[in-house]
Length: 85
Image 1 (tube, rainbow, N blue to C red):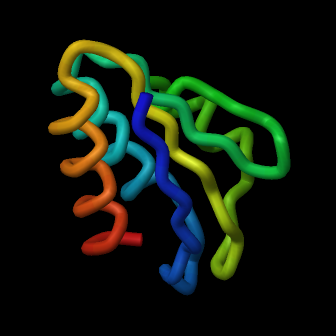
Image 2: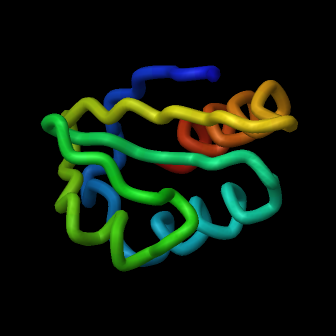
């Protein structure tokens, strides 16, 4: 399992547009991808799950990736978050 922590820097937090793009990025991999905030984890391949976390600017999230392509998935998702969130 690969995991990384990221602090959201987007002034609007994790709103619908970047959440949708994150779902698309996570769905490109077979690994299970979860995003966690304040001890609550959701499937990063489901936009409604991500939106229920209510992630705001300055909040920390933990992304966990587990599966056969976890190395590539974790690297891609972390790069996506740094570029967009």
